[in-house]
Amino acid sequence: MIILSTKEIQKSYGMDLIIKDASFTLQEKDKVGVIGVNGAGKSTLFKIIAGIEDRDSGELYLGKNMSIGYMSQFLDFQWDTTLWQEMLKVFSDIIEIENKLKGLEHEISSMKSGADEARMESLMKAYSSLQQEYENNDGFAYESKIRGVLKGLGFSPQDYDNRVALFSGGQKTRVALGKVLLEKRDILLLDEPTNYLDIEAVEWLESFLKDYKGALMIISHDRYLLDNVTNRTFEIENGRLLEYEGNYSYYIVKKDENREQAQKEYENQQKEIARQEAIIARYRQYNREKSIKQAESREKMLEKMERLEKPEALPKKAHFKFEPKLRSGNDVLKLENVSKSFGRPLFQNFSLEIKRGDKVALLGPNGIGKTTLLKIIAGILKPDKGTLRFGMSVFPAYYDQEQEGLSSDKMVIDEIWDAYPELNQTTIRNALAAFLFQGEDVFKEISVLSGGEKSRIALLKLMPSKANFLLLDEPTNHLDMESKGVLEAALSGYSGTVLFISHDRYFLNKVATKVVELTSQGGKLYDGGYSYYLKKRELLDTDDGGASESEKNSEVKNDWLKQKEEKAKERRQQKRLETIEKEIEIAEARIKEIDMLLEQPDIYSDHIKCNELSEEKENLCAQTDELLEEWADIQ
Image 1 (cartoon, helix red, strand yellow):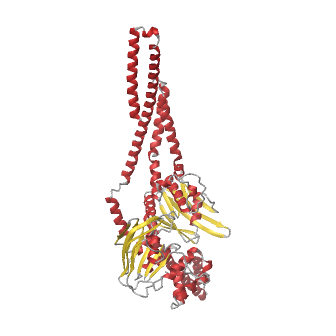
Image 2 (image 1 turned 90 degrees about the vertical axis):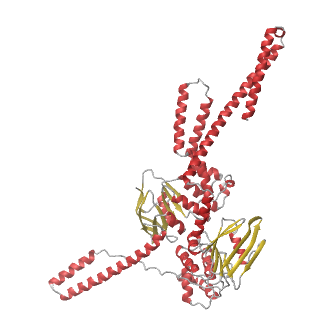
Image 3 (image 1 turned 45 degrees about the horizontal axis):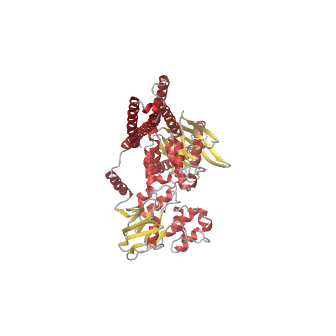
């Protein structure tokens, strides 16, 4: 069923036409990856769909009663609530029902036996109706859902009472993502949701989105997530939206096929036009009535022909290959029982051996010390404990995005050429083009470059160096998808050794031959690539007794029923406590009254009356003792 459709949407900002034709339909179960170069109009399209921005022209149809959830990568936060309070806002309707149920429970429990039966029946009917609505909306599970999403996005219970206003930008983005995921809208629009997520959180998000019941449109540079989650791909190119009926990998293949096919069709049409024009010219040369009519007929045919636009030239595939100038020994690095602290322990007793040609991915949660470990190996930091030994002829080089080795007064091309004067201009410009420096960009001064551009230059400068052991900290940051592919191919074909940190799982899968997982107590080596690591970890999780989704849902419901029973028990006990205290109060008042009566002369002189009162007092005291024991047990 179509739940959203657009036709010929256009959007301009001033003189810049950002979107000139966005036409598509969205089915209720579609999961669409939206891709395109920066500035192509992806975020603009999302804002138009979400109703945040107006379109200049075109049509947009949203299905009846369809709801849209939108998370932008640019957020304005002015929240003065705690994390838990902010997440509860998603379930305000359920919480309102819950409060009404509590009110009815209190009113029902307060009614005395024999009270207005009609009123009681009315209350019970209202309670039953609300309870059914509560259960239909999974009211029993909303707190569990919040905890599950917060845990998946990297928040701990210690964060629940912290004020959102004091969170970092990355934390606030995760809060916004958590809220929009919990809203369970019919159409979910996510703009770069993996920003500020570590690998574990990205994997959780991927699993969540794969199971998401509604439609999804997602802007992301995470190619691994796009491949695993999406079944369609929209590319915005030169203002037009192009559709591909498959995931990212399908799109890559199909796009090249389509461009080649379009080029062939255009060339064939041009040949046919030239052939027809030559025939027309020949007919006119004959200058006979019949030949002139034939020429005119063919001219009309050409006029009616729908001319194909000349396709954009197929972009040249960027290639960048480099090799170490000196081959290292077989043993590249040996770490033994390395430990490091900064106020608090990061990791301890970490050991690792790396051989020549290994491409080792260093994984672990944020804050565990991955960058610190790389800096220890690079000689920038010293370990608190443990030893580090390089093998024969090992020359390490470290990349960390800080660009300290760049000369601010040099041009981009000179920064590379001065470092490698033996390379010719064509080789250098091809390498620069592979890292997004083309045309006049190569003559810019380093001082005017953005942080991302400087990072790309620093990475490129490292590649052809004499180093044969590369230490790379997030090398794919600030690279577009094509440049990532160039780097993947270059590192995969590199005969030297690489130890790298990355959150890009597609990159990890393409480059890593081994994976080491850093923990606070050391590390674990997986003698295979990223896919191998995932399979092994999945087996470990299964051995640890991972529950299925249905089992988890059943557990949630059972927990809720248990909590409900416990709360009902607490209410019964509280009511019984109030009754006991009232009965004790009445008994003690009567005991005092009897004591006063026994002091009166007309009573204590009446032997029979005196015995009756004494016996009553004795029974009351025994009754009070029993009530006090019951009161103590309940307390």
